[in-house]
Image 1 (cartoon, helix red, strand yellow):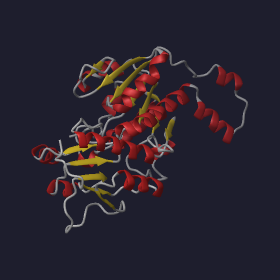
Image 2 (image 1 turned 30 degrees about the horizontal axis):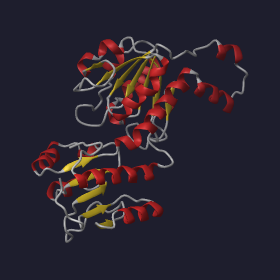
Image 3 (image 1 turned 180 degrees about the vertical axis):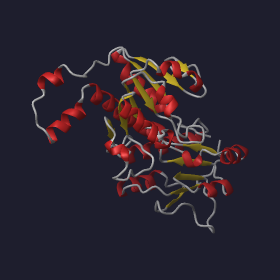
Length: 322
């Protein structure tokens, strides 16, 4: 529990819109609040070390000036997923939280939209509307559309997004298997470790990548892993582009090993206009917008304020990373 102190220092480099910035000022009026622009990565060297950081602070600053608590305004924390940072934070009893539960609903709904769109062949219909405008009734009606009921889904990376996606898919009676490095036993669905996943990929209709970016997940989905997929399986990535060997993905699409791919993330980003992924067969791309939603800034502020209340009272913080 933090020591009783009505003038704890908060430093924020997230660009809240003015209405929300004003609310943040009002709700933290008993604190010393500094609002910096997002281009400023750390407090000035001459400034006192803040007790609380909110936004996307510089990692080197955190290593040398560890605050009591840092809240990231993103679900991803690749830059902070470091052994040296964990060691320093734990030694100083400092906390690190992210905003997973701010973005889990949007990302899960985005994945659901991807899954439904491919099941109903909506991208193909849209392509026809914009180009051929041929009334493909018989071909479309009796073509490759399928029902999702009882199909098998394998989800890699079982965190907040996956948990919400399972809730959305469950009414369809789908067979859902999760893959995570350390099963906890409270996931509510069968969970296997990565080295046990190949047999499940072999009969999966849908393979979903929600893996974070780190050394262990770099090119996790390579030619060998795509080779274990059942022919025609759909692949979805809303995790990080670096978790996929893009050349292997393109080859799997061209060979028909994968029936389609829906990507919200790529490597690199932005994806250059001449990148072969744009022209890969049955590959559909959205520009890293899976977590975006109209009121996300307001939800980020609410998340921080709820965690701030928990911090003040010594209660557990939501979305704790360290």
